Image (cartoon, rainbow over all chains, first blue to last red; front, side, top):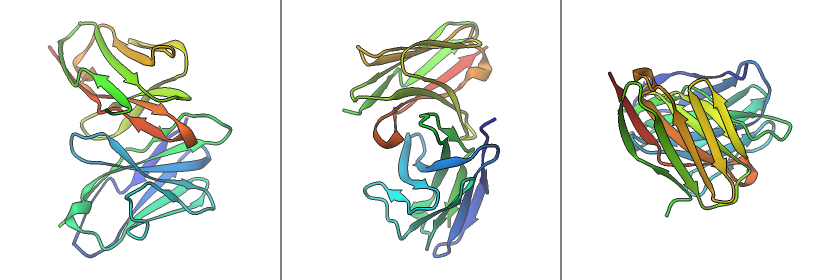
Length: 116
Length: 108
């Protein structure tokens, strides 16, 4: 149990376009989902925390108008990179947390975004 | 100084060797996680612990809360164990703070 999927796994888009990444918890309800970004050979960096039905909380330095996060249901959160630029190229990973006070997070397989 | 420090950064071992990866942290935590990231990028949660020791197959994780230190051990290492191992701690608001990772290469 506790499987998290991400779609797409890889995406290439042109500069100026927007791209949406989906994160789904397949067999549990995720009250909280997290979005991370990872540059090559670096550690994960938390971008934002989203709770179902409420606005996402963004980390300092992350532009909320550029990285739109929607957590519309207990099994789905989406990250939309708007007006993408080559510097947005990165590996984006989501994780999901069950309710009930557990600290365990379940990670998605990640999405590699390349902006040309 | 990072809140979560791992050592070594890189580790090469021969198949069958016993491996230890260390993690030290400087903040108060609710839990400590050991994660495994394969070259494709996907992350697997290996352990979550807040005290003592846990074992799963050839993997053992220990934590010493007083010393703010955790270790991940791999017994009888195998090439398929080659990956990046990441230590992360849960602090406030369930946020994870990550170490920089240990890149393990196990050779035949």
